Image (cartoon, rainbow, N blue to C red; front, top):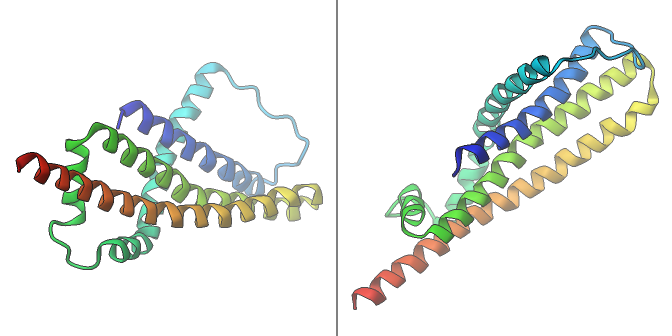
Amino acid sequence: MATTQLFVELIVIGIGVAVWMAFLLATVLNFRLGSPMPDLTVTQMMALLGIAYVLGILVDRAAFALFHPLERRHRERVFGKDVTPSVSEREKYVLVTSLPLREQILYNRSRLRICRSWILNFLLIGLWSGIWAVQQATWSMTPIAITAICLSALTAYTAHTLAHDHYANVRDSFEFLTKQDKVQSS
């Protein structure tokens, strides 16, 4: 995977973190809806982008840890338990053997990483925007909270299907490549 692609993924995740943290700070600091926002310089915006990147890394790791048991179940459903060679060895084989299949697996993994993290982001955006709306008695904010929680559920379903698809893709790609190897060596 290109470093730029991973950087962009983590920025996308980190921007979501920045949104829910803004609602959290608005709640904690009792920021009034309609108050003027501070003018930010380009330097300050770049610093915030750097912070979003770091926050993206943190939430990516937290989401991975949180959802790893569910992904392990998908892996076991697709491959069974104690498969030889291991799933990671099969995936590495595909990644180093076929550039087109490598790109497909990395793209699927990228989508899974983003969805996994945005389950948390949407949930926390919904939670903190809802709390802030109640604190401010601003019911016009309620649709943001409800929409974010609904998007969290939809993203969870999508991550669920992407996890299964990822392991099925690794299995099918490995089988395809090993059959090709056998045909070429015959």
